[in-house]
Picture 1 (cartoon, protein in one colour):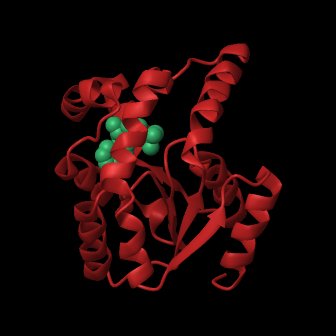
Picture 2: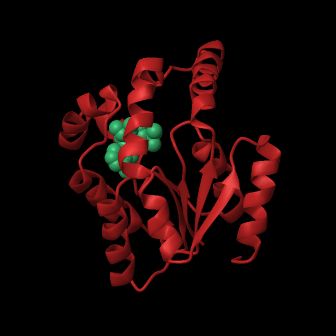
Length: 195
Ligand code: AMP
């Protein structure tokens, strides 16, 4: 099963990805997590990405495409994967198409979590509050001002990725404002056709 989760920051992609990892036994490939790990480890990529991420802007396509290309080649991704937070631009989507075509692989589905962007700020503030209450570190880019920049980046560059997958016939929309259980059930129903 090769899946892409689409939708703005705060739409619930991470939550659904974690659940699908359990259900299908395939890894979640989150470019955000990979970049945060690179920043933490102080690698050359991490040093290049850090300021851009803290500002809520997009890291360059060449950096992100190269980390995904390496990650997809790892043995645990050979039976499938869930891409979370990638592709975020048309150039990334085209690079992914080329990467998969070279390997003779194809995508099963791109699932878009559709949300009301005016409600996302509340959701992200809650996420920060819950992390704080649980004693977990709060992501710097969940600061409301930075979050607005992330949403703007989504609207400017990433929203255009949806039509790309609609055109290739793999796109499915799911109401991401529904309760988590309902979102999960809708996704499971879509994927049952591919399992
Ligand atoms: P996320 O955890 O997916 O919200 O990503 C956190 C941050 O990492 C984003 O705001 C971007 O700065 C960067 N990032 C993650 N994935 C990508 C991507 N596919 N393209 C460009 N930047 C990305």
